[in-house]
Image 1: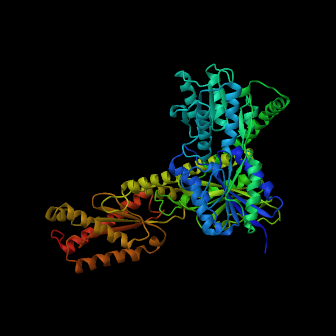
Image 2: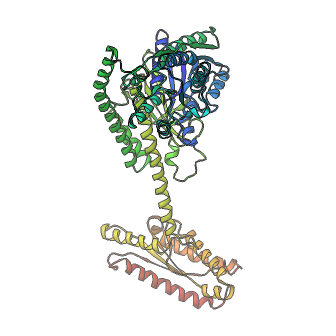
Length: 640
């Protein structure tokens, strides 16, 4: 039995840089052990609809945690109410230890940053070295643990130093750069700029600097701006951002070692607080241009071209996938097309990659979604494409409980699971392997986003085609008798005419019917009774000529075009028709059920008939001869 540990990691993907730092540390911490990591990664944004966010977070429901030895929550990024706590509860129920990084959760082993000490160090520097007395806090969300800890630390030290912060000095951006920019512009317009804008992360700080620059203000000469996280862009941006480094790589290493010990029956404190480090920057101290900064910016300029080309390649590749999906007319065609593309070019997705789909949403032509999955995934999914270490699988379906096909080597691997969905409804998932950094995050997000959008449109197209088909079908159906109408008949007649011209072996017969006594029924019993009489007449015709299309071409006139089975049995069917009418005449008492119908038939003969109309005229003449015989025999002037 293998002693390899299997660890589940849960995170959202919008803090790509700090997550990649944490994952790097986690893999370093596990490197000396036999560990397989499964990262379940969704991308729910604060601006998303609740339905879309639910579809993203459904990837967390994919694994059965009873199959794992432990779990890690990168809880800094999981702000959705109840989600992180729900994951911890599932871990407890599965009997496995769980480590939460960035947020204190009951029943978890928690690792958090010492936000307070880092903020204290930075704020004391701003007050003592730069005489900051008035600040505005550009925060994240109202319920994010880190954002609130940073906010509270700023308020606490400012008040201790005699510079209170009011509620109007705090703005919650929901981590949105647009909201952050609008807030800074509003401060400028209202002439409310403070000595410093204290931002909850570096992205918000960079946004603030750009907004200030756009309005002619210089950082730090006119106003100081600070961030948090110490992402690479905070050093290459000009001015470089004064920030706090949470040292997430160290967090990841610590989490790995803690969890591995717990998996082996060890013990740990429930709360570990790791230090942060204040990093001075040009956004508070002015231009430094030290050798380190010069090298970073030089490398950034060089890398920007490479990054542009790489991003263009990713964009072109994912656009190709999107177009392939939208150009497909059916689900099987779409799967085959995607499989062909991924076989030919794996430069973006890699040599181990899996693409699984639930066929239900794509084969469901109606808008009825009751059988689609909102929580979890279907037990078996179709394999769109699967490659393991360069070997393409020909499997058509995959058991979802296995999550990912087994690797044949003995290396430690990390698999990244990303959801595909139509709002809250699951449509499948993607699996990437091993390489995980901000570039890989962009690939994962780009693939997932493009495919999601394309599938949504594809599903809409399927349903539109279905609706159009139904509209056409309804336009070809007689609303009273529910048989096909004259429009449908004319279309069928054109098809028959084409076959006569193009297929010398084609044979068919035309059966004409005329309902007797309809005027008498209408006059004596009313039009509702007449409608019922017509409907019952159509049922008699349809029940005899089961394999032929029946058309109502006039008020009381019907026609059937006999092909294949009914053509071969045409004489027998006409006898059955006459016998059924005689049975009805003898046994039925209700005037509306006691139907009388004249019928005649003509068989196409390429020698005698010059065209389709000749056949119809012959069938019509035969029907009228039958009508004369019926009138002569049964006196149709009375209702029978």
